[in-house]
Structures are given as C-alpha cells and as structure tokens.
Length: 446
Image (cartoon, rainbow, N blue to C red; front, side, top):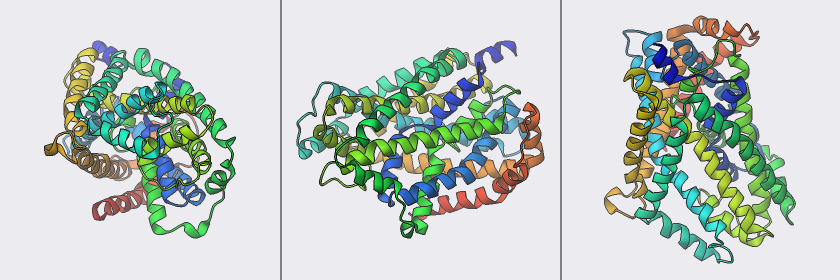
C-alpha cells in the first residue's frame, strides 16, 4: 500500500493543486472555442449568460468531482467502486477513463497544430502572405498525414514526459511554471490588442451587451461552453481530487479553479476581438478558422505582428499542454490503482496507446480517405455525448445515490464553513441534471 501511495503521489500545496486543476480546465476551449462561440452568439450578452452558467452549473459539478476523488483517493473507476461497491455505478467511472483516453487521442492532434504554427510564425513563413495563401497553408498542413502525425507524436512526448515526473515533481511543478507564463503571455497579447487602431469597436462588441440577442440557442451555447470549458465529466477532476489533502477546502478550490478558468477565457476575448475589429473585412463569427486562418491575417496587419503571432501560438500550446496532462493522468491513475503499474510504465504505455488511437484522427482531413472525418466522429461521441452523459450520471450519483449528506461530510473535513450547502445540494440534484439533459438532447438532435 505504501508503494502504491508513493506511485500515486499527492499535491505539495493547495496553490499547486489549484494551478494544476485550472490548467486542466484551461485549454483550447478557452483560447480557441470561447472567442469563437462568443463571436457567433452576439458578444457581450453571451459572456454574461456564460458566467451565470459557470456559477450555477460548472462550480457545483466540479465540487462534486473533487469530493468523490478525495473521499475515494482513487481513479474514477476505483472511486465509484469504493463508494458504491457491488453496483453498476462502477461503469460510470470506467466511462470517465475511456472518455479521457479518447478525447486526448484527438485533442493531441489538434494541439499538435499549435506546435506547427509556432514554427510558422517564428520563421516568418506567414509574414506578408495574402489571405488565400494563409488559408492554403492551413489546408495543406492538416491534409499532410505525415506532418500532422509527427506533431501529434511530439505533443504526446511532451505530455508523457511531464506526467512521468509524478504529481509534485511533474504535474505540479509544470503547472507552477506554465500557468503564470500563460497568464503573462495572455496579458501581453491583451495589451497589444486593445491599443491597436480601431480596437474600440471590438471592445464595444465584447463589453456592451445587447440583451435582445439572448435567445434559447444562445443560452444553450453558453451552457455548453461553460460545461466543456471546465473539463467536467471526463474523470480529470475526480483524479486530481484524489490527490487533495483532507485539510484543503474543497469549496474554495472549486470556486478558485472556475474563476481562473473564466478569467483566462475572458482575457482571450480581449486579446482577439479588438485585434479582429482593427482589420477591415474580418468577422467575429468566423468559426473554428478564426485561430489558424483569420488571426494570422491580423498578425500580418499589425506592428510587431510576427512577434505577437508567435507568442499567441506559444500561449495556445501551453493551454493545450496543461489540459493534456490531466487527461493522460486519468488513464495513468487507473493503471496505477487498478493494474498496480509503476508510474513510469503507466505513463509510457498509456501515452503510446493514446498516440496510436490518435493516428486515424491525424489522417482524417484528407491524408487517408478511409479515415476521412474520424476526428469529428470521435469528438462528437466522446468529446460531446460521452462527456455530457458522464457528468449527468455523476451529478445523479452524488445527488441521489451516494447522497448529499455523505458528500457534505467529506467537504466538512477541512472544517471550513459551507454556508451554501443547501443551495449546492438543490443545484446538484435538480438544476444540474436538467441543464445537462438539455445539453445532451441538443447534441443528439443537432
């Protein structure tokens, strides 16, 4: 047991845990997806609805995941097995492990694109290129199976290297370096963006709400963004929660992680929208092409664009890496707890499995016709449906099976007062399941 505990590890400090958990939540969804969805849904009004969804749905579910993890001190599968022995709830944990594995398989592919664009911006390959050439560069790259697979491999090597170092020596140490660096880079980009000529229009779009634009579809988009942004439903927060000390206040930890995650997303909007509106002819609802097609055009049009373009893609890569670390740790924790592997073996084997599972996604954009669209299919079934289903079952488990009183007993170990316990229980038992079912139905019929 002592050897297994040493293989699992634990957080060295609450700050380290909050930074690592924030890193898990902060990923491509904040820097890439949040500005995209905000642009597609009307700007400032969407941001307000999004923040409300984080508070009412995201924080309660995150707290539930932390609570399960710390009580069980195990991976997601082992956690449900310990808290509900001899029941089918164990399969909810297994679903979380599988979901984390499959999400990372294609997430690493997309994260590899950010590494490619670091090289393109640093070398000036996009500097002075016209919009058609920039679009062609992106299309040619994602259709090049060998190149995309190589960057996918490189990104997985970085992820495995950090996870191999353990909780304190690997994940926590990396978080203490990467998260402050991410924040500094983002603030530099914000400063550059808001001082550009024409940035005022972008700031108005982002800060002046038009509540007439709030429709049911906008609320659904905000709900989905809040949910996906916080890394809920994939076992990552249960896994990270299993390394938390009994003395740490779980409530303040959940609030801190959610606030940091939302802060980074909002700052990303400040970095992108003023710059977007400073260049004539570009639209805030450009969709996913905003990052790899539209933004290089912006960097070409502003002073010191090559420098700030390079900084932006470094920022994007860091955000992706902090999330990939947590996703790999879900499967590594499973291998340590259930298969009794040593950490190094678990990280290397699981990393290799993830890489191999991701190869079809790397080849899915035209490189190999047989794999066409695989990335989108895996994203739909695991990055959307499986993720949401897992979170629904988790909220039902804490709210109705394990029970709010048992969860509150675990939360109370830190002796910190939880004045909103009744509100949390109501949200977790009623509001969260209804909201998650709404997201799930919208995905299935969409």
